Structure formats: C-alpha cells, structure tokens
Amino acid sequence: MNSSIQITVLAGIVGILSLLCRKSAPTFQYWLWSIVVVRLCVPVRIPLLPTGRSDAGTLVNGFAGTFASAFGSSAEKAVMAFTGTPALMQFTPQRANLLAVAWFSVTLLLLLALVIRVYYSYRILRKSTLLGRADLQVILDDLRRKMKIVRPVQLYYSNLDINDGPSLFGIFKPRILLPRSIAETWSAEEIRPILIHELVHVKRFDPLLNWIQGIVQTVYFFHPLVWLINGKIRSLREESCDDLSVLYLDHKSKRYSECLYNAIQESTRGAAWRMVEAGFAERKNSLARRIVRILDKQYEVKVKIGVRSAAVLVMIGIAGFTISCDTLVGVGEVESTVKHKTVPVVKGQEDIVVSVIHDTVFVFDKQIPMDELESTLASVMNELSLTRVTVKYTEDASQEMTDYVYKCAFNAGARSIVTEKIVSN
Image (cartoon, rainbow, N blue to C red):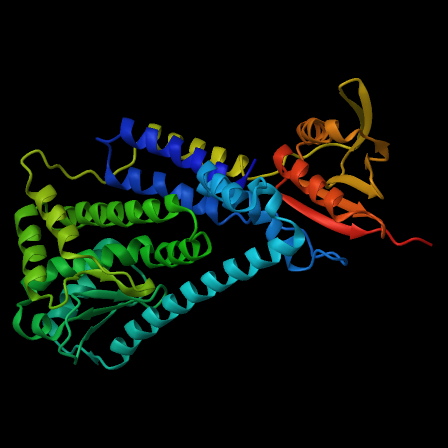
C-alpha cells in the first residue's frame, strides 16, 4: 500500500474516532493523534542503490507514488496538460533524479530553518542567568517531589528585553526560562502555575515528541495532512497540560487562567509558554482559546485514560504499524493466472522481475503481450503482496519500451522501481 495512502487512511480513522470521542480527555486525544506521527517514523521501504542507470532515481522512485497520491489527480492532469503523457510515466530514472534533487533540496532547507530556530533559542538560554530566588527554588523542588520527577530542573531568567514568554529547554536536563519581567516582579505564588505547567511538560517528555514532530514535518513537507496533524497534536498537548496543571493547582482553574492571561500581557512578541526544544511557540490566539476553555462553566479536569480508551489506543497503534509493513510470504511456488496466461511466481521474492529484451517483455521469464503487462503485474503484486519491481534491460532495449514498463508498473501499484542492465557474456 502506498505510504501516502496509508497516512491518509490512518489519519481518517483517527479523525473519525476523535470526532466520536470528542468529549474524552485531551490526553486520550493527544495520544490518539500521536499514533499517526509514530507511524510516520516507520521508514518507507527503500532498496539499496543498484549499479546501472537508475542512480539517485532508484532511491526516489520509492517516493514517487507518495508524491503522486499526495497531490491527487489534479497533479496528474497538470502533467498531462504540459506533456501529453500520464503523470506516473514521468518518473523514469532520469526524471526521478530531478525529483530527488527537489526533495532533498527542500528537506535540507527546512532542516536548516529548524536548526536556526533551535540555535536562536539556545542562544537566548546561553545569555540567560541562573535564577537565585530561594522562594522559587523551594516551590520548584516541592513540585518536583509531588510530581515524582527525578531529573533536576534549573530555573533561569532572560537578560534580553525580548519576551517570548516562559519557555522549556532540554529533555534529560530540563531548564525553565522565565522572562526578566516575570522573574523580577511576580511573587512566588504568582509564578507557581507557570512552574507547574512547565514541569508537566518535563514529566511527560513532551520536548522529545516535539523534536520528532519537527523532523517528521520536515521529511513529509509535501503532505498537507502532516502539517494539520502536527498542529492538532500541539493544541491537544497544551490542553492536556492545562488539565494536569489545574489538577496540581488543587483545581483552582480561575487562578490558572489568570496566570495565562497575565503571561499574554507580559509577552512582547505574541508568543508565550512555548516549548522551545524544537523552536515552536504558543500564539496569543491559542492562549486565548485555552483561557476560554478553562473558564467555561462546563469545564472539568479530565486527565485519566480509562481501560477502554487504552485498548482503543493499542488497537489503533497495532493497525497503524500493520499497514506500514510489507506482508511476509513463505517460500514455495504458486501460479498466477492472468487472461489465461500462466506466470510462474516464487513466494519469498523481494520484488517482481520484468525483463526487457529488445522489444519483448518477460515477467519471471514468461513472455507477456504488451497489452496484458499492466494487468499481469497487478495480479502478481496482489498475489505476493510486493511493491517493488526490478526492470532488467538489454543494450538494445528501446527507451520507449522501458518507459512503457515504468508506466505499467506504477499503474499496477509499484512503490519503487529498480533498473539493472543485462550484461551479455
């Protein structure tokens, strides 16, 4: 199954469940949507680069179907309008090389942007000073014991006039950074809700998932669902942390919401209480929605995940992992009949072998009429649950014939195509 289709299907299932369970705890919704991100961490099956004329195109042909399905039929029509050729046929080794360059270029640019944002964040931390307020340190240590956080947490305050709001840095050595205005003018009890909120992030290892989200979004920049899902996860993460913070604040939701509001007022650049580990910030409108939610008369703290909810998460997680794996087949010979043409197939093969000898095409050494090639490949792929096709060609094989084989393979559902030149003895 195509990787992009897998993501879309899994996101659709999660979206339906999220809608049906919209009254459930934000923590449940948060982990439900996080399953999609974890699934994205399962790599697309990429074969080793073979020798021959495929080069970088071989590597990217595995992504070609993902791009095509991600942008849908409109992209195919656009290619048809300019070239007069079906879009899937465009991913020949030569054209796939261009796709490889484009994908790697954009990915590198996005990674560079991510690195710059993280560097900027840690530059702020390096110019900060360890906060020496004993009253805050007492509260911080007490909260750590109450939340059963073993890792030491340090408090810093910024020496810069720029105020992005209270921030959290680090995964294993967490550091909380307070703006100078808050560190110098707020009382210890006024700062307590901020410390609780950031310690909740520490307890849940949220910065780690934030890093994973940033990397996944960079790699899958072309898929709009990835951007939408990441935004949804960040929103649910903050709602979940709000609920836990109110719980640790003895259910004083009004006091907590007042602290959120005051943090908005202190912010000079429209962002507060961000998780800086991956360079992301909470915008003022997001904070406003959280305040409205907490002050709602029907608001109630929901932090626990029940047994049924946990079972749902496990089942969706297993389903998400299952559809990302190729079906394992045993060793043994079977026969696949296509239009009364018997094609010998061997289960246990890693891919389907198509040979182009001059203008004659063979599938597993069985000659196939050109008009039956696509249906034959589709049947064999379905029989063996394979997604990779190896195209072997001779010196005198025509480019038109090889391109036609590519088109049939992609239309039949091939995720990647490997080319190999047949060297005559």
